Length: 242
Image (cartoon, rainbow, N blue to C red; front, side):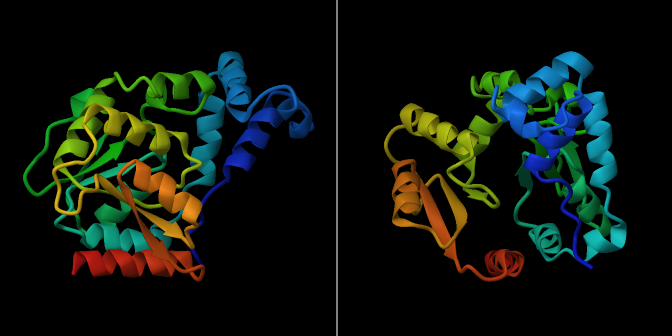
């Protein structure tokens, strides 16, 4: 039995559409984007009905999390003390607890402040406990793209002081592409790092198109094969750790 990954983005939008009283999500999507549909849902009902459903759908038992290869490797990366996630769930925090890794959640400004030997799990798009910080709708993303909030200032700082490894993202994620264009514009052509890159990103079977666009933003592509993605990412993390 594998780790239940919870609903896909499409399933989230379809559930929201159903809760709004529309039987066919395709008809509503013809009138607006997914983010606009979720914006309408938030205006009509707030986040609570949707987040309550997500919590129920994304609640794997401890033994499933304990067997997750990627979460196990993340917990063992003791030289890495900061883990950013745009997910709302608490999978990383629960996995760290199961593996005995001291950690703290950072979801709002008052959570900031590093502690010796304590890993920080930065919930960049908010989490269940802070629905007001969740980035899920059109206006949420527009606000996030301004990069003016305390969490954004924290990210700017970490980008200047650390090497970033992106796992589970692609150039289709507007945050990644836009963020690093802003970084390049603000902090000059090349960073003062050993390899000249501000970040690395794991991409399965990367195309020349992806390599070139990431390179333009000083992000080095780490290619992996088209086989078992979970196993390959876990092996990569093990190699980095060792």
